[in-house]
Image (cartoon, rainbow, N blue to C red; front, side, top):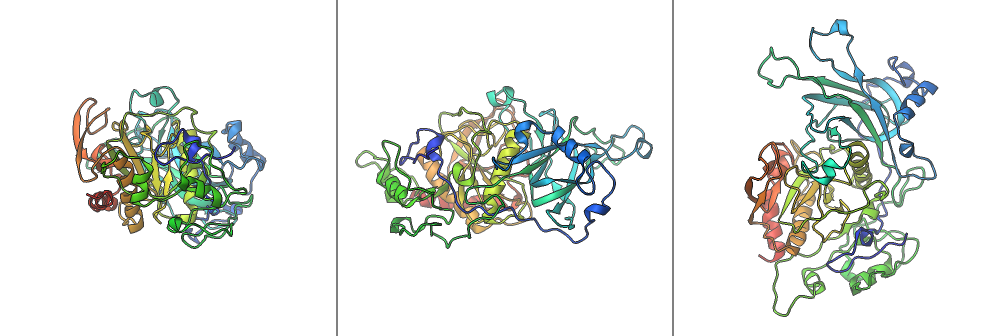
Length: 503
């Protein structure tokens, strides 16, 4: 389907934002330790050792037919494997719930893992750890922790998205890189960690391990190879010169097989120039160009930051068949909630599109959401990505901050920032994005706003809460998100965002 180009401010629909990114690289393995067991010596278990007919049958039984990826349709896949008790009843304390998991086993290649369970309202009081084997090797990683408290990233209680779908409880997804072996253990823990005599809380029912393969994205061949990363600002695969005004377009720009043409009747000259060079991001504009594109009334001086370059959904390879067809909107955008994805930091910026495709599939196929949960995402190099479909200039209803999704936007910085400082480029990207998007709705990034809670573990439904226009997830929900180190940078982001607006 031919991609449509966005107009200066408004967009007609998500189709108008589907320009492809060109250089997502193949999923490279996360660091693995050398303390590995080769496939032939892994413990006996269903699927352990070299792939067997029994293991293949077990894996495919757990999949819907649409989840088994074929070479002709490289859109990713999900392997869903039920967890089982790890300890024999004779080895457990009487009355204590059993740990669950899977022994070392082979699997079809995957790059992201998570655990889901039947009841979306049930909490997992325990620890989840996984270790994986790099594809085609005998190297197993060390045990990695999976963030268990993910319920706060979801559609609001009572919303159509929450009630009209089979939504599941889920951990945060963890990016592990290209892997073909996995081991997982889930151990229950007491509610009160100070009470040594407390009985551990039973684990949720119906727990399953989800192994997500992001599939190939734009610019990748069937074997996962991709075009080399260009110099910053240079388009890939086209000799035509880039107009000077686009010299700072992010390196994620890439060429299409054919020259794009403006198919939106009101397409601006900016989009026409992009069509001529085959650019694949919504282009960055200067502040003057941004204001000019809005056709403001004479004398009007709104505070709107320059529009940053944004990689579209087609740019990062979103499979639009996965999500719900219709879009959800709210009246306005009053605030931005900043998150971290909690997927870990073992990814490169060339892998970011693969990380996004994996999270997208995990949100929709594993967790049961209508679409990718966040409105935007930012990688460690400061590239900005369109998240949930519906239009980057629109007030799209997301599923990012339980209780406060209405009239807000969610921005996920890819990575985990509890003990790791977020890259300066990522914080700068948050400032640029909020200066522009909040400016479209007349919001001051340094200001306060009153929001009405839809119900969370921090504020009851109906409670009016005064918050920063740029807030962290923890401001609306009792959570560690967006991580202590990223949360500390929000003050700087507010100040920078306001300056970009001209305040």
